[in-house]
Image (tube, rainbow, N blue to C red; front, side, top):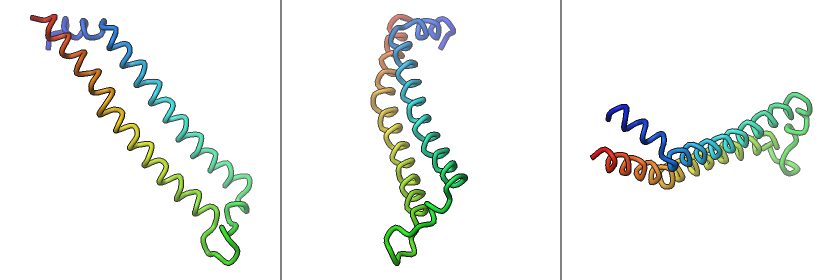
Length: 106
């Protein structure tokens, strides 16, 4: 592809929309992950005894282990959500932008 074609793609309003939507979505997911992770770290730092409590009386599984397991699964789920949206919505919009750039190039 030529640099002129790249410039046409960058000038396309759909490209601006793609960049904005993907950026908002990525920052939203990043904020959620960072808030959960650093929230957990803060609980470990300032209230570690709460994480050491058993989930139910007599259980060897603690609140901390359950929370970490939840976070691990939740982060995988967020990754799956991002991949699904990237492979669907974002890729479709990218294909439209490329198709329009090729049309204009001919």
